[in-house]
Amino acid sequence: MTITSAIILSAGKGSRLLPLTADRPKCLIDFAGRNLLEWQIDSLKANGIERVTIVTGFRSDLVDAVAAARPGVETLFNPFYHVADNLGSVWMVRHAFDRDTLLLNGDTLVSPDLVATVLAGANAPINVTIDVKPDYDADDMKVWRDAAGLLRRIGKTLTPEETNAESIGLLAFRGEGRALFTDAVERAMHTPAGTASWYLKVIDTLAPTDRVGTVPIVGHEWAEVDFPADLEKATALTERWRARGL
Image 1 (cartoon, rainbow, N blue to C red):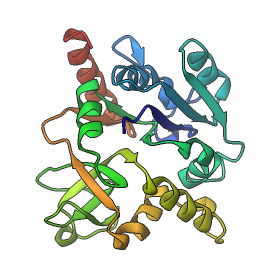
Image 2: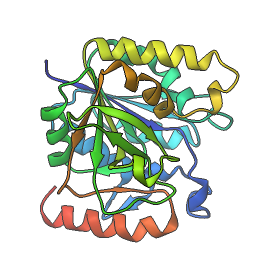
Image 3: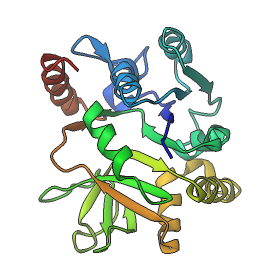
Image 4: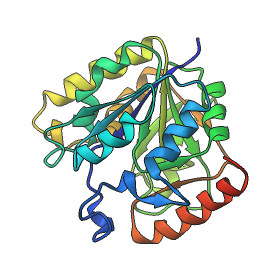
């Protein structure tokens, strides 16, 4: 079944990019003539995504204005964004898992071709998009997958021996995977550590169910915008995309 819905988690401020993000969320940083959020929306829309739900927080009014100019794009305000990690944003938007959907971190730049590869390869109930490189640093969301492509572990603290890929921050949920995930999110939010957790911790707990697959996008260009050093890389990447007419 074709995926026509997507969720973008854009509630955070991006404090590691201060002062650039002093009065605007990092999803609205300009790259080659479009802000990060517009690049994301355009890549999704180019692949037939009809409904995009953006979870907002810091300076939600600015994100609302971008969404209002795009057909099929809506926002949902997370009122506790400043005290919760992204599991809280997923819990807020759990109703949007009423159909097969993509889940995209608000700081990940993806091309239309990359999204197309994910949609074509997302055959498991839950699918984690992965890339591979020679080594991984402390901030990478590291992945261990088995020979069949099933995810066995995910987390920043995996050892080199436990790591053979990284998550890029794009997931796809199909069929039973939607309820499997949202039920686990609900359980996690009822624990004392719930609001301080990442949603990928929930994915890690679901790995033993054999319902979490991986979709490699090796060879596709993408970027995470998290630190000042990422800005130059993201600018160069989007300038190449713009030159190609994306």
